[in-house]
Figure 1 (cartoon, helix red, strand yellow):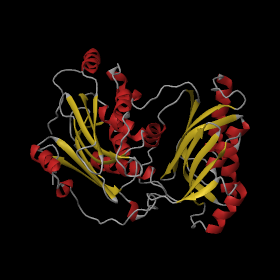
Figure 2 (figure 1 turned 180 degrees about the horizontal axis):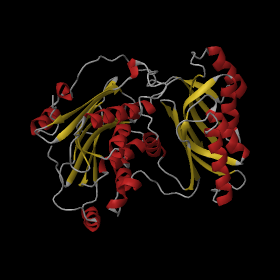
Figure 3 (figure 1 turned 45 degrees about the vertical axis):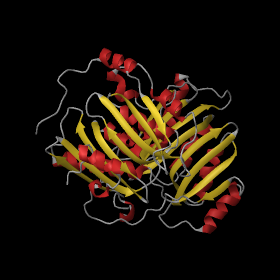
Figure 4 (figure 1 turned 90 degrees about the horizontal axis):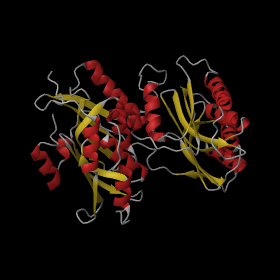
Length: 450
């Protein structure tokens, strides 16, 4: 198999110069489409460009309805059809400027791109990263330890998938409200948390990491779960997910173009594009062309990729690994269970008390988002029965009575239920209907290799 690699080695100084001369240009178009705002981004191409753009849209809580991506060569051109969370077009005059500022121009070492994409420098918090085997009551024990050690949780996110758990938590000192930077105290925190993670004699290695500063939580969680091999199908509960929620992924080589073509279909939900692009980037693949359609209950994505060495996928083992990793990336954020939203006055030990009540009522947390806005705690938990049994309304009401009816609400999550999917092969080529799609199709930029 021939490999398509650059004729000249990439030079750091050339990358910096190109970035200064051709900074990203962002335009917002509200006139072309009746249903969505078009955000167009073009700039000099560099590794990680697509992930940076998608991450900015993700952080702005925009919903991507369609996307056309092309970065084959020295130039990078993307068009995103986006709406807000309510499905409305964007009329904020400052949206283009905010995206422009988020993307650059920034001088950055090419060699540092892999580690720096998605990193937001900050020194307001101490960051704790945890990975280990998931089990009932684990989150309650983690927050109890942090409360006992006088650590205040100001933000965080927890994902579970395939019997594994990963979390990124931001803490401050309970008394001073400042980051914890004392090496002895950090070592103590790390030791106590590691003991919690290893309580069930985890066959895989449980990990804790403590550092001063912040990372992009979602970006980091994908990296942590990928490193923890949550995509491994040999895990004990790998078959527990319903076939209805299983993504459908195909990976085939397109010999005449020298690409590997990845087709993906699954129930649509927010941040799906971010999750798949993160995974391909972490697996060291470069997206040269892509088309995304997500205007109904299902999302369709097609990627033309090569490995960073310029070669398409060359073995069946590698092909299966890409499929499994993309399936895992989609499922990590799929909402399972009942969505509980807690909003009230923040206080020391709040999360410890709330998760203890969950545990005492045989509820298991499958995903959590923790946030502090001023003096208010805004937390979201997805809970299931710890023994695998359905959660009854009586259990939820008992929990609400104990925590507080006014601060703990049951929220309907339109993305938590997956519609049934048909099996069989599919191709985005069958979906192209509009003039713009046909135009790109005729150019060969979104050709389906079927």
